Image (cartoon, rainbow, N blue to C red):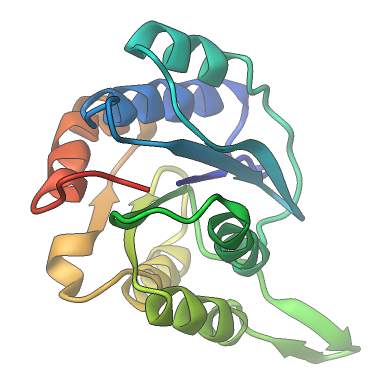
Length: 199
């Protein structure tokens, strides 16, 4: 399952880089066994591609290319809730469940009253705990382009919370979206290691 950030700070050009990187990562899995799903999120998540099989890399890449950019806020917590929903909705089968999150910044805080808010980290705790308890291997990829030093620190903390353990094997921080494209094969290799097939 790919969970892709299309929030306002991403922008259309970088969104295209995210889609191209996603296609590259997906192409490294064995299409004989793998099913793929895509959640696109900003202020709210959308189930763009429900878990399904593709016959070849070209049909997969063509389907991904049709996912157009929509901007908004950044509610990673809601996207991860939807990720678990999509795994539950899929026809059960044996195999590994993998989630690859690609985000361009920390999840937003939510204001509950004037001067009162819930942090992005606190909002992530429940969906992440549920994903980990459901034995979903979560890989978290964060792109730092355009972020302040404070946001970079917050992103690092959130990626560490989101990813499966050991964190060093499941977190990838990248300087910019151009580098995301070149790092996509390495991200794919990390997420494929030790997995016979993907749900």
